[in-house]
Length: 251
Image (tube, rainbow, N blue to C red; front, side):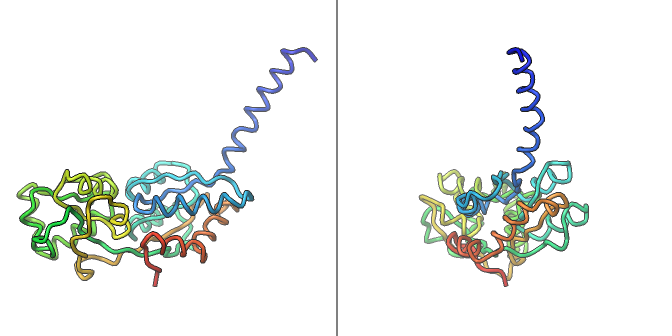
């Protein structure tokens, strides 16, 4: 066999096997607020060396859900609220039997130390307030619910005091850098701040309970490796890591 024939055979082998190797990856879509916890869990899962690699995609739950509907290859989806999981269920993209609540969270308001800001009514005096875009960011949707129930949403919108962020982590960054006077974020994100501190916890009666539903996509339900990672996240080690990063256990 001459060199040209050998090279041709090798090239054909690469083309044939590449899709198979790519298909082995466990593709997950995760809300930005779970970035740090999921990174650690992926590392722990990979450490066994017995499973396919996990390929994460972090971002706002709304954007991630829409990507799945548009055909993005995803095996497992985690949402920062029930809305986007229900959306995928209605679109027949999620295996309903696999839906479960992974963790819970709390909404807080952060900013540089300011003794004048200790409750919702106090933020009307601030010039700029970071908030995830409510249309795609669950943290922003929860925050808007709280603003509306507190009776200050229209006032802040009229004063153009709300600064929209692409996700909850960007909202935190605005406050942490002093680019806004404060921001609505999850309690778990507040732990990541370097300068900003929690000025107050948003009263839980002002917004829907924050839960993180998880589910396998219709494709993921057929993937044994994806199911293994799903079981790992839902198991005791997964809960241990989520608690470490400030999440609370699902009830």
